Image (tube, rainbow, N blue to C red):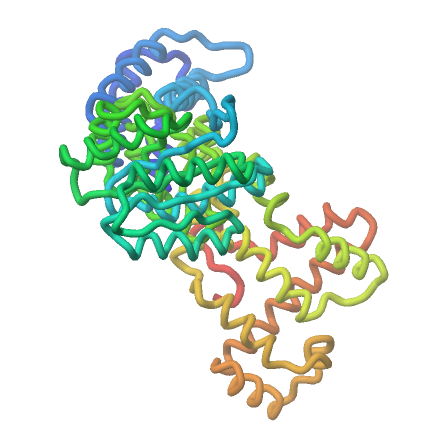
Length: 459
């Protein structure tokens, strides 16, 4: 998300770095480029106008401060204004009510409501330790009811059954009664969508809202619809007392206009970002971290949180103990590392959150075959335990057997072996004195030579 905007703003803001003083003249061209960058990112025009005007007013005449150059001051002003239009801080869900806390999900058809219900149920179950029930009031699409039942089973939430011959209000009231009876903390209600905003849909969801009185009414919107996302959110905001927004498919949107427009247009905070198809792909929306990522400054806090949640600590400790004993990093260990990296969003997902690595993440995405890691795992799976422990055993006939068994080419196997040797050298340094510092130096050999334009080893 935000790749295009990050590129444009990063190059544009470099133009003012080094200025002794910020004036109308020396920031005029920069502000024109910032305006163009925001419009190309599909940010709503009223938001762009206000953003540019506020930044210009704050920037002109700023004197050199003790710790910042005027150029850095300007970047700081841009960052602060980005944070302001997206919301000053992350806003969580409100649970200050007699259980169950009812969450109503509203939005257009195809926005990802049903999937978001499952993602939110998993999020509340794992991070908030809540007992969650989900129900579908979408009587127009029996497939949506079945889909939610399947997803609820996947995330471990209680599913309240409903059918197409019932009325949405009756379904919601019955689910609420059951949730109270079974002492659930949260009830999430999925609602029917339409291909466009219409009076019948709005009337139905208003009736549903009045019946169950949800403490949270979340509008689910597809980030890829750009300015339309903000306009649709405004229509729902006028019809319902929304408490927040869930922005879906943000991983597929390189512009980011919706994220920068929705809060300003509706006055409601973005509470969650959908960042993938899996049920764990839901992130709390942090305006300060998002602003930092837009300006190419990375998002280390989110990377750390993701690592704590997704990395297998047991495997990491086991590997560390193994290396300390002087044992070699073998191909089974490499497979574990590949799987852990994929859980973290792959190379590009990790680089994107590191300061100054945004362009390198894009270069990596362009150069790295995303299916490569699956091929590497297939190759390792086709080896015997002895071959994984000692790759030196691999002669011509063994290599032919492995490539046939994994459906790969000899060059794929040789590339894997080369990369394993590089990783093995890095891990050996970890086992010595000053292990982490040595490992970081060793990682220099794994980075693309010549910066973002370079290539990863063997790719």
